[in-house]
Length: 185
Image 1 (cartoon, one colour):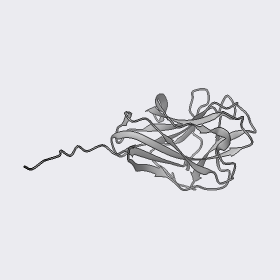
Image 2 (cartoon, helix red, strand yellow; image 1 turned 90 degrees about the vertical axis):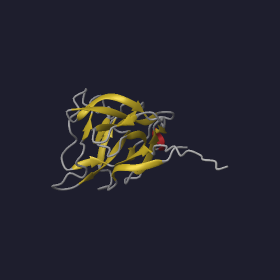
Image 3 (cartoon, rainbow, N blue to C red; image 1 turned 30 degrees about the vertical axis):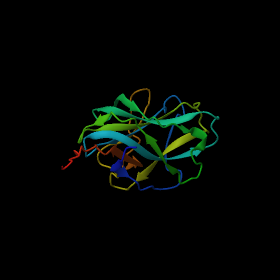
Image 4 (spheres, rainbow, N blue to C red; image 1 turned 180 degrees about the horizontal axis):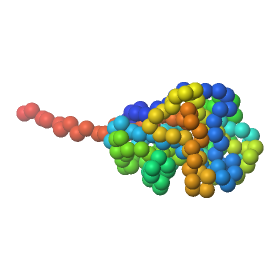
């Protein structure tokens, strides 16, 4: 089992139901949070804070993806999480909750390079039954200065707004260190 090391994070959560829905309609399919790892290593897992509004059909899933960056916006999928959550199991508590998504080893991220956490799912587009990416909002400040929260508007990826970022925790897999076994005779 790999050892996960916390690297980048934004844990603060602002107000109940404060966030941005994804899969709400065709102009809001996915959400994105930019981040910049400080260590070159394989991505291990990402935890995000989410909340659900309404009821989503049984068997429908939510997952995360890591995408490359192009001028501050998501560009192309690099890897999809091996963990998929039941969409209807996401809490409907107004404060949301943390959910962890693991990634298979072997996907290295480079320190100082911007990437994007993409929130995705396969549930029906619905204005009333949806999942929110919870965010932190700070008046006059950027809660996480190394990436912006965005949403997929037919591939345009506009910003969700200033002074806010989606709550996340990014972990890398601790690199294995080879320690030779020495036998003294």
